[in-house]
Length: 485
Image 1 (cartoon, one colour):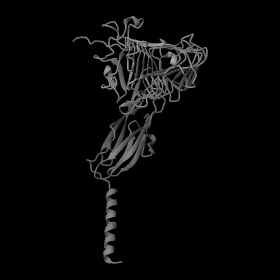
Image 2: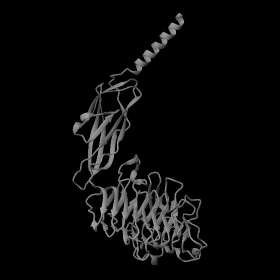
Image 3: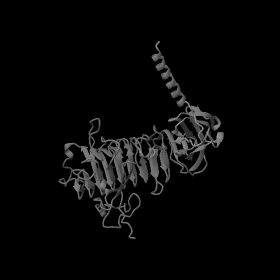
Image 4: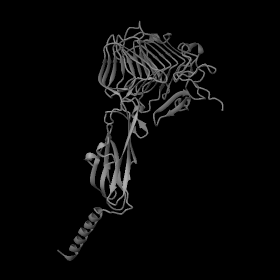
């Protein structure tokens, strides 16, 4: 082997040795510090006794040399409610020793917590600190916080006789909530039902969900944490299944009830039109992964109610008899362009069976959305000139200016230069999925309603007086003129 080749090989191995040596060297420089992806790891309010989702903390060494972490521990040690795993190693008794972090490298810390029952109706808070003792003598801290509330935890709730649920704490329901034939379930103000992602509500008997403005009855998903830092799971759709009113169930009522974040809202099966199957008043169905309100050849009355932002139709009707008065039906579902209509009307079901459309009356209401026309349908030819359906004193995003047979004193949102009617509402935050469909001060919705159609609905969904100005606003929300300073 010639001398030149030997020299090259020696230089190569020497470079590799020093490169590895530099990579594996560790400093005790007292100025070196670790960097963290978060200085506080927060767990959103949890259901006590239920293990939290796992949080991840990244620990970075951005210094010019490696660092040794002598010890990582929870300040409360083995008594801490938090559980910590560092790079695959569980911190037994809340403490672990000797961690090496090379320069420009990191370690992964995973944290979870299970909060015990508090025995109170209040939300309780808990905190601890994760301490990092460095070989250079420095001590760094990351705060861990969590909150929790107690709940009744039920796997498969079956109501077999008339029952009223307690309101002292929420219900976390797995699998299903079934109201058997002949049974009635009463839900009082403040009742909250947290539904696991596989949970459906099946009503064969009857339900009366009667809340108040201050204490509504709430049907929602069970997840109380965040999808992203800015976005709660509760503001996203399809967190649980939905509510089905089965054939033969009548006189179901939802008053001051909030139904949101399901795969569907309420479905009503085909049943006799001699009795009202569903009454909704002062309620909301919002942020749904399918149809919001699906009415199949039944009788229903919907008053002072918001139905909004659904991947399917906000309201889907096939046959039957229906009244909508002072409702806001708004199709601004933000997660897909392939969203359904605000209102879809048909007398032919998916099996091509015809159902008589006795009547639909929509009065003092708002039906709007992103599309140029959000009121669609599939009606047989005999309904073209009939008066079986009509819209009165309503704000509509559809084509109907020349149809006096079906549209009476309505205003049409046909301004295509605007962003699909969003200008008409108070809050339209598509980033955080937060909406307030109260009319804006300059909204075309204002003073559109007919006072004669307001009977029994003097206040809006939030209890605001509709008689304080010229005329009631269309929809379920009334604009209130701010008091002069």
